[in-house]
Amino acid sequence: MREFNQEEIKEMEKIAQNFETKLKLFTEDVECENPIQVILKGHLYIEHELRELLKNNLENPEVLDCDKLGFSQLVKIVFSLGLLPLELLETAKEINRIRNLCSHDLNFKFGVREYDELEKTFSSEFKEYYQIFSTKLTKPNSELEKLQMALFTMWEQVSTYNLIPDHIKELLV
Image (cartoon, rainbow, N blue to C red; front, side, top):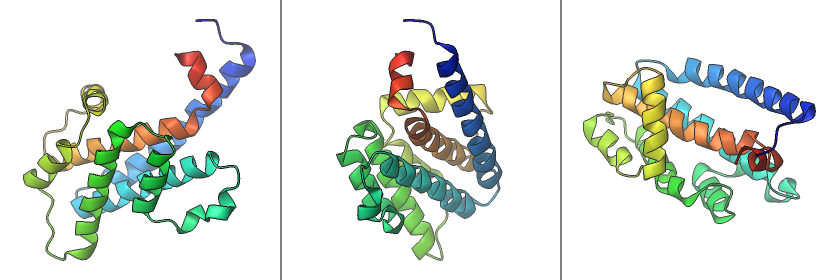
């Protein structure tokens, strides 16, 4: 692997600062005691990143009118274009299913069963990231904390694909 030039280093610093700003906002919005708020806010952050990822990878995004696409449509398009690894697809779908339950069922309660269903969708790579974040940050104990960590992991994965340009990704391999 070759050394980075000054321009590449500055670009990576800008990417890191941008991610840090986004991370602060995500954390402030998703660290709360209300599981419904956690689900809705986490879902919104992931949806935003999916939309931006799609826009950034289309020649003429205005033709598709990306801002009017729902989460399910964004997931189908982003994954069909290969903008994210297929290993994340089932987790994205499950996050959307849980969000829909929150939005349409007044009696919805997030608990062990719901978290277990979400965890079943984790690919081995996703589990690795989840565990890395869990050990470096705060070890999640409750289902709410595990949910927060799962949403963070998905958001981080999509954000990373969105923030880091291909020419920088190639240098990091």
